[in-house]
Image 1 (cartoon, rainbow, N blue to C red):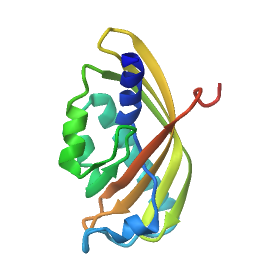
Image 2 (image 1 turned 90 degrees about the horizontal axis):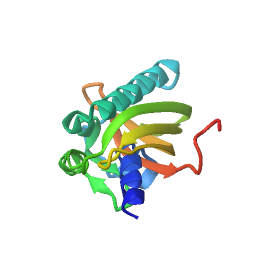
Image 3 (image 1 turned 180 degrees about the vertical axis):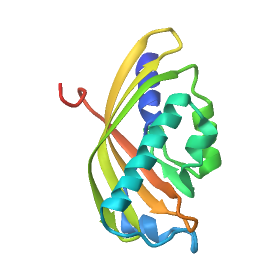
Image 4 (image 1 turned 180 degrees about the horizontal axis):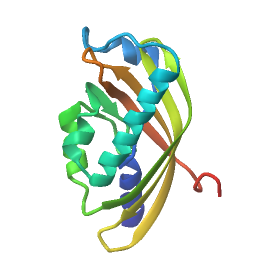
Length: 168
């Protein structure tokens, strides 16, 4: 049972998020910039997601949490975390799990007012505290907003575990 919990934690480390209008209306005024529809925005989002994956691999809790909006939400099976400090603390307490590989593939992106919703698959290889290596796969949604300085921030993240890895 503990191993299942650790695998769920590993998937949660890779969590990426959903979006709805009620949630977006709760954004702090002045923290988002307008977005342009099209390929350039999608390239920027893709680059940001790949950076996120690289930071997960390096297990840099501070840098990962700073990719979230200040009031960003990380949806987890054990309950949501709101804000960078809560997210940083959760990531810093990895219980001995080491991320060995992260592979993120985008399926599609859609525009939702001031946000871009990115959906795809993530496969992660992690080393558990007992030394065992485990692969986990999940479907993700990441809601991205643009900060007033032009950075892309994760507003909300969630994952749904896959029964098997994509393409198998």
